[in-house]
Amino acid sequence: MGRALRVVWIVMIHQARAAMSHPAFCGISELFLGELAADLAPWQARCESGRHDRRGGSRKREEGAGPKYEFVFVDRLLATLVHLRTGLTHEALGVIYGVGSSTIGRAIGEVRPLLAERGFAVPERPGLRLRTLADVFAFAEAEDVTLRIDGMETQVRRPKAGRPGRRAFVSGKRRQNTVKTTTISDAQGRTLWSGAERPGQMHDQTAMPTEGIAEQFRQHPTVKAEVDDGYRGLANEFPGQAPAPPKKPKGLDDDDAPLTEKYGWREAKRRQSSKRICVEHANAEHRQWRPLRRYTGHRETYRETHRAIAAWSPTAPHAGPRATRPPSGRRDITNARCCTARMNSRFKGSVRDQSVCSVLFLSTGPPK
Image (cartoon, rainbow, N blue to C red):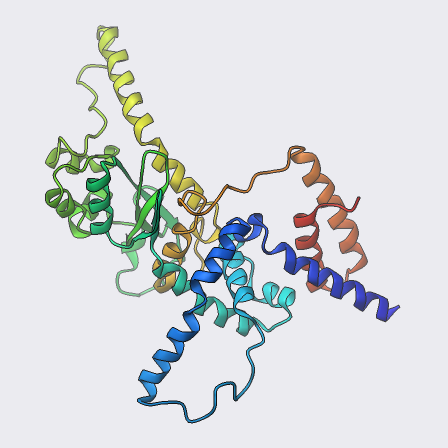
């Protein structure tokens, strides 16, 4: 009986590993997953070059000596993507891949910087990537692209009491400790750049001159962008480049105010909002990744995590189609939950078994 359970356990582990490459877990399609693995493959050569510089000379031992790193690069990449997409803990990923939690943590620490440094892909321009604001505005000027700019807030952990600058992260809008970022997209809602991380207390308009966005508008006078009410100062400084929603006329709430003015103002605001709603959709897709809904890690690594996720969210030009629910929708999900509960009842004493059962059945569905 014990041997049979062990065989079942091994089969379930292999199926759970195979499910990790599904877009519902890693966030990108299998086609682009293969391309990403091929693009990041030379990272080992870069690591060896860095070690050569630190040593100040060649290796003292033959290549291949020492303990073997059996956690291959493709599995490290998948574990990082799954962790960024679902927030699955290092311990749970270690159970699936048969390694320790420290190995998973080291793999994420190695792969996440590589994803963050790749930059943002350009639509219909394979091989070209945007890494800075100057790249984005130069691309928009060359291709005559109207940008959409909006801010995004992510809740973070509250700093320790007595720590300097503790109140700087308290957002006046959400009344929580947050980190703000700026997202720039095109007319189709594809993310061209996301960054300018700042404490939650800083207003969006304040970040325009401090992060260099206003300076880019001066250097590229033909670039246009759609913004919301939070960038009223930017719209006043560059009225022909960054129009904001129209202000509400005085006396519009009075009973004797003309209906034509009321409906005219509402229609003008609606049209302007419909032009920039695509960047709202881009931010919504970013929040499909668990860390950007509520970041529980150290704030020092938020910048790297945000760049790694935003560059590979479903709104990026190279991320492939978004994972959708099966046609039957809620019925399959309900059946999967029932089967998960039945399987978990067989492994009452092991939390590890229950987690793997949940991953397996939520990814592959109930048995036929």
